Amino acid sequence: MKVECVKDKIKDAVGIAEKATGKNLTLPILSSLLFIAKDKLLRIRATNLDLGIEIQIPAKIEQEGITAVPGNVLNNLLSGIHDKTVHFELKNDNLFVSTKNIKTLIKSFPYQDFPTLPHIKNDNPFSIDAQKFVAGLKSVSYSASLSDIKPEISSIYIYADSGNIVLAATDSFRLAEKKILIGDKQQFPSVIIPFKNTLEIIRILDTISGNVHIHFDKNQISFSSDNIYITSRLIDGIFPDYKQIIPKEFTTEVTLLKQDMFDALKISNIFSDKLNQIDFHVNPKENVFSISSRNADIGENTTNLDAALSGEELKLSFNYRYLVDCFSSITKDSVILQFSGEARPLVMKGVGDKSFMYLVMPLNK
Image 1 (cartoon, rainbow, N blue to C red):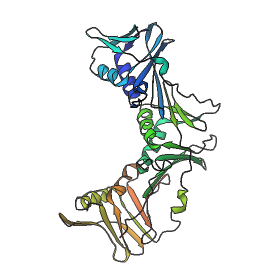
Image 2: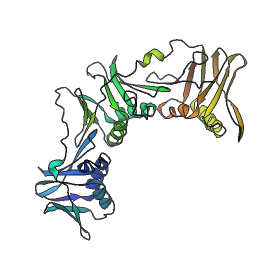
Image 3: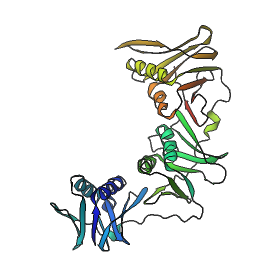
Image 4: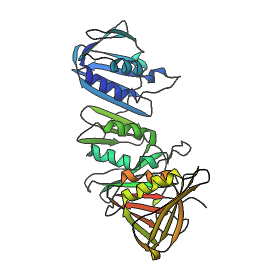
């Protein structure tokens, strides 16, 4: 193998792919990147067996070839190179990397040990604007469980419903749901993607402009654009029927500016306790909506907010972090809080926005 590349292109590609390498002591090949030089393109592959990626970049290929090299070593090396072009040459099964002023030898892995990436064959891929899909994933991913004990909820659930694809995530304490309008022409099966993989999918797809093509089979999902291919394992399970916990009717509603609520929550968090407890008091008759907190070691705080109120009086407590996590997903300037009574979940939405819904359970008194 003998290849010449533009340094910025190879550096960016290796930086993206290296994050998908594995840290498996019993399978050291997973820590490597597979380089395939063929047909005027350099293909760079990485996988941790859960997630795989292939990136292709244009290159001047004097001699075709294939090798596997440690991803972190190559990534760190390229980060320190300032020349405009980089040369790669395979000699005696080791990779020589050189520029005008730098000559480096990187010991290679046996490339035959590198796992193959699944390539899903599907005649009708689902296509969607990459940035819309990324925004959808970002809108819900923070609500997924961080524990792997229940893989069904340590995941993002995606399905089609009435001309939308719906993305949902829950850790059983809160739930986020985002709808993306796609029309009725495209079909999207129900899939459950592991949460850890969605973080990498977000990071990679965020670099893509235009459409991404999505393929499915029973065990895998793939995303492809002109020069990037990603494949992820799917969870074989059943996502909770979360619609059962969404209240159908509400007894109290509060409408206010999103920024006002966010600022009040930040102040209250200064005085919250070790449970991050924030207290809501809604009294429509006296037109009072307050957010308060108390810490025996620090002090206490109450903030009254201008809001439109209706319904019954109530007092509820919530985890501060669970409340503020959703604010980046609400694109409207005003937010509506909907309550259905004591010990019942709070539903938050942007005023006039039917595409996003956030539900959070109150703390037990």
